[in-house]
Amino acid sequence: MKWVFIIFMALYAAALFLLAVGTFGWFGQEQDPLSGVFLMPLGLPWNILADRMGLAGPGAVILAPAINASILYWLWKR
Image (cartoon, rainbow, N blue to C red):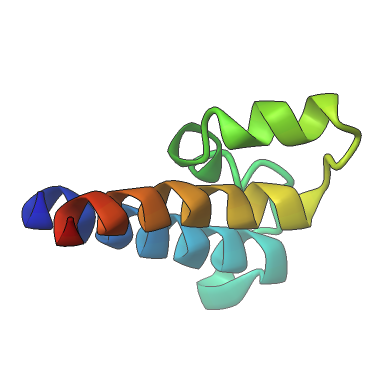
């Protein structure tokens, strides 16, 4: 379970980095509204639940994978 958590956190960090690059136009990249698309599958099902509760927005999309990361961490340490 340790490796699953480490791989998930690496994917989460990479997705956050790509979001920042696409949002702020770093490294000569054009600003792209779809730069956060890689966070969506990492945050399932929490981003769908947040959308149905009316909490949709960038904060929910960014923090939804953190819930899955905390669950994986709990399973690893259990």
